[in-house]
Length: 167
Image 1 (tube, rainbow, N blue to C red):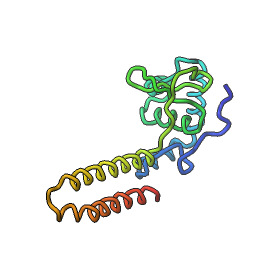
Image 2: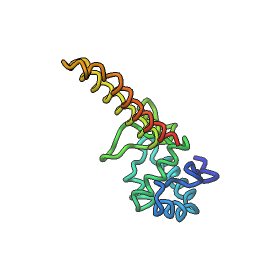
Image 3: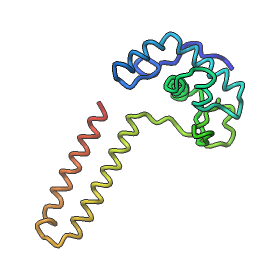
C-alpha cells in the first residue's frame, strides 16, 4: 500500500472540526500529525485485509481518543482512500481498502449538511401531508378556503430553512 504522500485535509484545510472554538483548536493541534495517523490506518488496513477496521480498532491500535480515530477514518473515507461497509462489528461500521470490498455493500459518505437538508425535506413532506389531510377532511368551509394560504406559508418556511443550509 502506497502511503499518503500528503495528509488529506478536506475540511477548510483541516482534517475536521465542528466549527466550535475547541474543535478548531483540536484540529489545529492535530494538523502536523494527521498524515502520520492517516498512514498508520492505511497500513493497518492493508495488514487486516478483508477483515478491515472499525473505529474501536483504530482507537485501540492507533489513537486512543475516539474522536480522533473517527476523524481519521472519515477523512480517508471522504478522500476516497477507504470504503465504509454496511456491515458492523461490535456495534461499529467496518472500513476496508477498496480492493477488499469484494461483493459487500458500502455506505457512501454523507455530509452533515446533506443530512440536515434531508431532514428538512422530510419535514416538508410531513407538513404537506399534514395540511393535505387536515384541509381535505375539514368540515369547515373557512378552513378549506384557507388551506392554500396555510400550505404556502408552511412551504415558504421550509424553503427558508433549506436556503439557510445552502450558506
